[in-house]
Length: 370
Image (cartoon, rainbow, N blue to C red; front, side):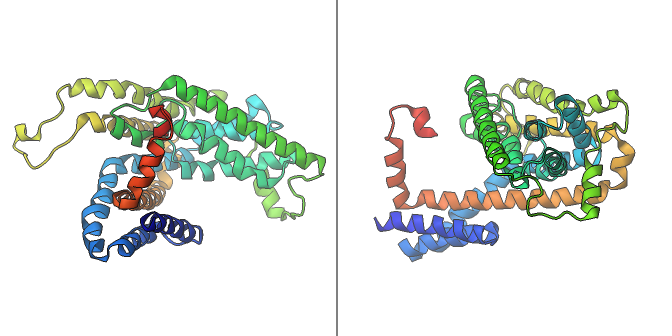
C-alpha cells in the first residue's frame, strides 16, 4: 500500500509542478526519482542511469524526426500564407456566421495534414478571433473551439493522421498510422458531433444571457484594425491560387499513404548493417517504417509549401526555421522526459498492483488496453 501511495504522490507532484509552470524536463526525473528514494534509496542512481535515461533517449531516437519536421512544416505553412488562404476559402464556403464550425474545420485540416499542434493554435487563433467577433460569440469559447479541431479527432482518431500521438503506437504494435480505420472514423465522428453540440449549447446559453464577444472587454482601435485585416475575405490572389494552398497538405497525405506500404516493400527482409561492415548498428524496419513514411511525407510537404510562395518564405526562412526547431526540441524533450518518468513508475513494485487490477477489469483486451 505504501508503494501505491508513493506512486500517486509522485504523479500528483508532477502534475502540480507542471500546472504551476515548472519545466517538465526538470521535474519529471525529480518526481520519478523521489518515488524511488521513498521506496528504496539505494536504487536512485541505478534507476536514473539504467531506466530513466535509456527510455528518454530511446523516445528521442524514435520520434525526433516527426517532432522536427512537423514543426518546420507548420512554420512554412504559416510563412507561405497557406494557412491564411485555407482560412479564407473555408470562410467563403461556410460563411462567417458559422464561426465555430469554420474554426474547427480549419484546425482539423491543418492538424490532419501534419502541421504541429502547437503551430496550429497560433495559425488559427487570429482568424478565430475575428470570426467570433463578427458572430458576437464570447471570446472565452475560442480555446475550446480550437482544441476541438486540433487536439481531438484529427490528432489521434482519424486514420492516417501524421500527428505524433498517432505515430507512437505504430512502433509498439507494428502497424501503420491507418490501423483500425472504421473504429477511428466512428470515434472521430462521435468526438466531432459531441464537441460541436457542446460548443453550440454554450453559445446559445451565452446568447440568452446577452453575453457576446466584447462583453466586459474594451478593444483598442489598433486591435480592431488588426482583427479586421486578419480575415479580409477579399482574395489577395486568384481563386485558383487559394485552392492551390491545399496541394501541400494533400501531398503529405498521399505520400504518407504510399510510403506506408512502399517502404516495407523496399526492405522486405529488413536491413542488416552487418552486411556492410557495421555490426555495431541495428535498425528494426518494421518498427520504424511508419515513422519514416511520415517523415518523408512531411519533407515533400515542406518543399511544396515553400514552392507555394517562395519569395514570401525566403525573406524570413532562417529565423522562422530556427524558431520552429527550438520549439520542436522543447516539445520532444518535454515528452521524452515524461516518458522516462513513466518508465520509472512502471518499474516500481506498486505499479504491478495497478497494472494487474486494470488489466483484469474487463474481459475484452481492447478495452483493457485502452
